[in-house]
Length: 99
Image (cartoon, rainbow, N blue to C red; front, side):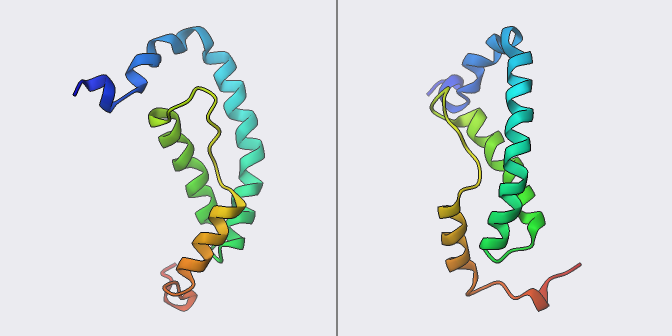
């Protein structure tokens, strides 16, 4: 198993020098769209809105580095919010949250 199989971004990372401006614009545009969605989907899942920000930041980074497609779109979705809500309602109790 080669290093590029474990870390596929090593293949395309050198090519980013040519497209970094376009990638930056796409990232900022995606951020503007995802932030309100992330907050809404966190609320749908029954979680505090800040958790939506966490997943909106972490999931796309992981998907960008280890995703399998140049055209992959990642981020929060309604379906995942409903599934998370169904699972965490058994375990999450707001009165036990540490501020």
